[in-house]
Amino acid sequence: MMDASALARGATGGNPDDETRHLKATIAALRQGLEDSEAERNAVRQKARAAYEGEIAELKATIAALREALEDSRHEGRVAVEQAVAGAAGEIAQLRQTVQALREAIEAERHDHRQEIQRLGAAHQDEAAQLHVTARTLREQLEEAAFQTVAQKREALAAAAGEIEELKATCQALRRKLERAQGDVR
Image (cartoon, rainbow, N blue to C red; front, top):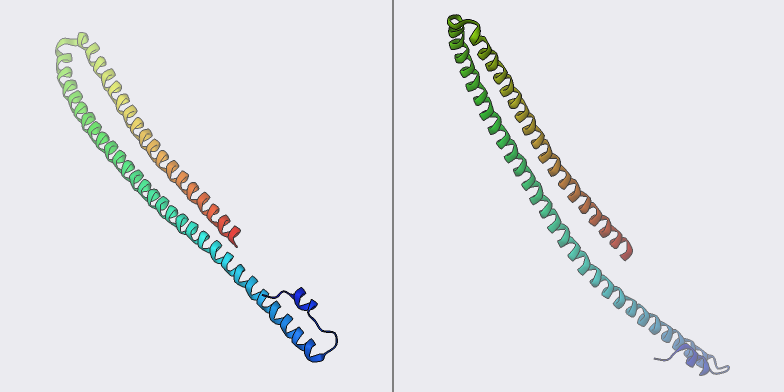
């Protein structure tokens, strides 16, 4: 390829045809240089684009994997909460049955004691008071167990919500990185 300076040195001094040829040759050389430069730029762009497309595909795969992991985590969280709730509900039902059985037993004992109290008098009044204390203690234990069950359920729900928020934050951070990477490519 001839460059413009070589063409300028070969210019003739006055002949219009030579000058026209010279100008045409200069134009052709400049056009060729421009086309070569454009082809080189296109090759560089294609290389960069191929590299970024590979990276974008990899990031998309990572995002898909993270989304799937998030969904799995959410599902596991829901299952854990459902299991915790079911366990707590079962325990509460069992405690209610126990309380009802205890109440029935206490009522039966009261009835028996009333009869004994009527027969035995003041000596047995202490025993009845002791049964009342026992019933109160059992009720307090039941209330404490119910409170602990509710607290455990709340802790399980809070832990699941915290994990979900962390995964959301991770996804958002990855999305921002991807957007920055795309912005840098442009």
